[in-house]
Image (cartoon, rainbow, N blue to C red; front, side):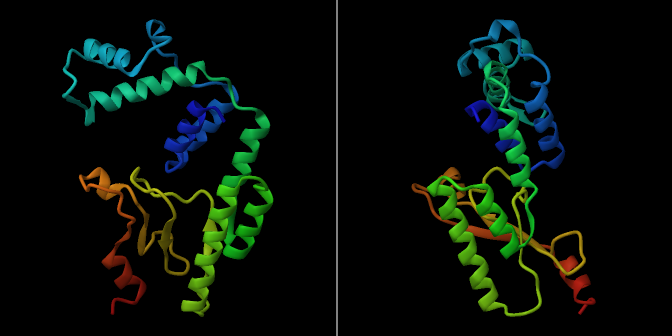
Length: 212
């Protein structure tokens, strides 16, 4: 995929309804057109356009978003309007990839069959296979370990594996989290600090345990 489409899919990944829209756009073209005067814009051009149209300054926040965020989104639209539509076979392959979901062993086998090239992806699958094997060794019970290629956390600071823990038959998770190696660095730490964490929902855990 061209960079503009790769970024569009990446930003939509954690939002199922938006991801469906992006797949439609990948077939028929992006919705809406950026202003003609910005046909070859830079981020600086986008910022000047946004501040002029909204009559605001660069440091202002408009409807919960900074001028920089609005400008970056506008620039994304401009770049997307320049990019060629993805090849239908690539869109179909991506849809097939994201549809993989089920018991870990089966899902990993399907993912390997879909992605036969690329050392980086192969290494990621090897790491995921090792994680599931360690979980099996640590928790040798009837609990299911599932792998879903479409599972993502709705926070941009996640950088790797995301997970959910659910009671059998439940829809909502008891815990959810993942890897976020850049978060502390983004908050001011002088270096990247590998991190992993999760949020717990005590009321769901109590209900799953019968209230005890």
